[in-house]
Image 1 (cartoon, rainbow over the protein chains, first blue to last red):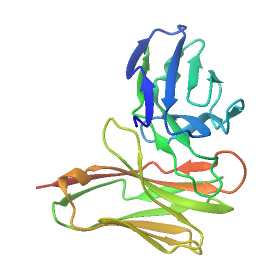
Image 2: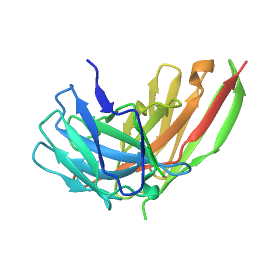
Image 3: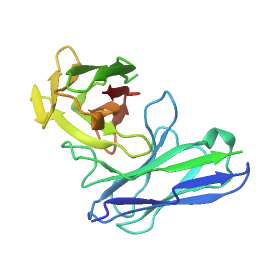
Length: 115
Length: 113
């Protein structure tokens, strides 16, 4: 099993450009998440999908959109990139939403720089 | 506001030595507490998850403790190895629907020869 995979690994964008970050999991998990990690700050939740067909905003959703394409795939879209979106983005998945201490499995991350 | 604070911010120890990392939280109501290890350039990997009723949980050389009354947790690493060099992140989950994880900023551990 590959676990959680993310593409691309690295990306440089100019301000105003758009892009989609891809995430896939092969663990048959119901829930998927997108986080960003910035220096000196804990991971912050952007959006999550508790189950296929549902998505909800997290702590920092502004400037992002998501699509739960199917049970395996959850994509994050930046419509008009801004320098403040320079960050490392992590996708994660879990069997269920957080009730009952279900472990979250993280992907390797996408390092995004917006100039 | 829910917060998770970790100390120290960074730590350097010699290989073979033990160390203890601290985590204080104000998340309420509390569901569970997790410790993750994050190697440089990688995603976090879970070490332990403890619920309200658990005081201690071990995973090999890693032992986590939880005092839900004082809202404190610690991660003890025994007989450290070079491969333990990483950031250790404390994460606290509140109750309720969806995802309610609050992440600490991590303790950066470096193990040297």
